[in-house]
Image (cartoon, rainbow, N blue to C red):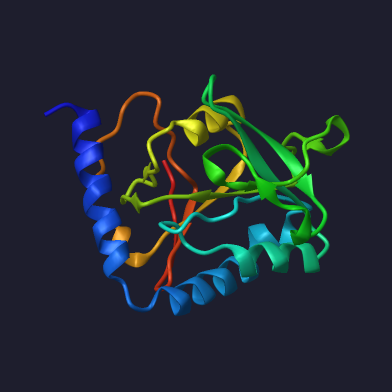
Length: 191
């Protein structure tokens, strides 16, 4: 079985496990609270986040917390032809409109476009993660491409605890994260 096939099989299993969860709202709240007290979030002037899809850890409260804390909050807008993304600043939740993949995005304009700097934290969605900080995402490769272009970003993946696996199948383009927060623990990765 190829690495891509292994990832697809694991993706399917993780999505099934998420649909079976009965405590997602409580887990989302616990994860949001843990992110907000993490030193990297506290210190970040700029937070790159995302609007969650139904299969992801809910981010609505986390996004609002970032805005309320005065963070420069930016969300990705996907270029589906190139499988790349650009981050644009969000001023308030009411600005969101449907974008690619029906994911809500902020208004797109040159003055809202932002790039990461030393004070940027990126929150990364994932279906699964392993002991080395590798993640399993939705399969588009958007985050791995972005992290390859900006390797010095502070990264926190947010995932449900049932998404932990000992070792994920990885390709050369997969990028490990520095930290993962679940409803049960905060784990930092070194290496």
